[in-house]
Image (cartoon, rainbow, N blue to C red; front, top):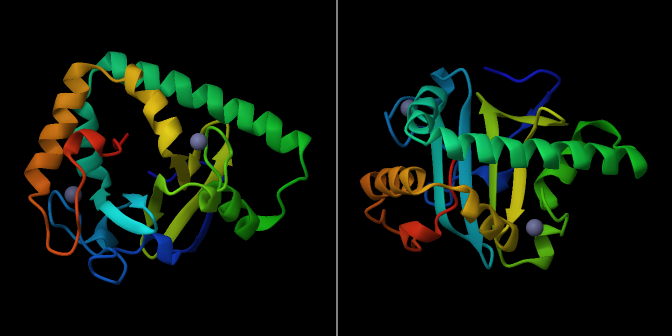
Length: 196
Ligand SMILES: [Zn+2]
Ligand SMILES: [Zn+2]
């Protein structure tokens, strides 16, 4: 489902598949067309400007995956995210107001959700977002944010919030779907950013 209070903008090339050199077309899990999904998510990990991990997942497959995560992990992550969304909203209000949807997209995509560092200042980071047909959902408020950029250092700080059950479930998902498609080099599953 689409979140409340959002903009829809054309998909930035950052969210294209590097393997296809085109926008993602299919869900990695069910193989269904992303155009037919009500919404879908894309997640990529970049190292020195190159994608070492990328995938698109339709809403039903994303829901099916998160059902396998432990309640403890989901509660921990939700609490941590909520805190961050609220503190970002206070910070945004104190700074210059964000004008318009493309400025909002820049804020979401180019600055780390947690520490605020610029994407160009770090060599390892993940980006993720929510999409609807040929558009990216742009949203930043206390309920959530799309898209997001998280630097690797901040991603590591989330690791203690993730239970073994959740980690094993995610590692299994990655192992099932990535036996190394040609042209994309993978870190070991343990280094993959997790999908929430
Ligand atoms: Zn699917
Ligand atoms: Zn950061």
